[in-house]
Length: 372
Image (cartoon, rainbow, N blue to C red; front, top):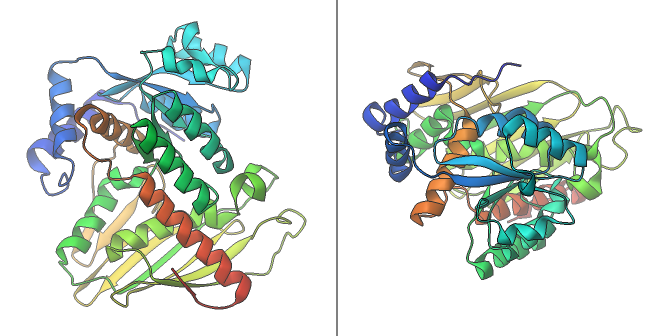
């Protein structure tokens, strides 16, 4: 897979948002102004440390931090010493900014690090968030935020007590296709979206932490279903009030002995809108559609991926310049830290989604509708 790193495309994106894309930039005026200013007069960037140097950090976040305008990679925290050496060499990091999980509390004394991005299995997010907040650093945690509502509450409380900001890695809130979905839902160009469908899956072939219930909290619902939950909440402009769910029979029970292999679920929203969806580790799909009385919005390919989305509305095809979603996400959070504004993807949103996921698992287990 190719990861675009063109400075010109990034510059064009900023120009589009600040000059020609006011409607898409609604809600992020400070960020776009900051990015445009940074293009003209580079200043001090906030320092970001990545905690956990697995595939997502290596393939997405590290490269994205070469494109960000308001923040930059200044440190790493890893349980594998060799990875620390490798990252320090690759990204020209000071050896003093390479930490282990045992030494990471020392970041409290490191002014080069302002933000820590947690990129570990979700069951570990709470303990790392509490330690980072205690060290006085702002926190981004990957999705899902945690494996229980209780852990989400503890994370929110820890950051509030330490007076640091907490955000969840919901990158699609900064993607232009999903921003258009939000705009259509808010302005009701087609009327309210009342029928929503989503299907996300890939074929899981080998044992890994994503199917370890203790670490992941569940299977494809936690890893993939959460994206459909996000999209449906965007389309409905609200959170669901009830859910139903059904776990499909397992085709590989020896592999999925701890978690579901495929889940079908339905969410009902306050205005009567319904989302019917499926998330699975035994089929390949990535689609999303929202229908209203006067029109529709759909992503027929790569609906929730990093790039390559194919989308349309009832008015015709959607074609937006590809951006680095992770770079936009991290720059927005850096702007939040610098200006004091609230992040559009806060811990409370992460908690909301864990509450919905918990209800879906309960509905699947009981065969009954669960009120949220």
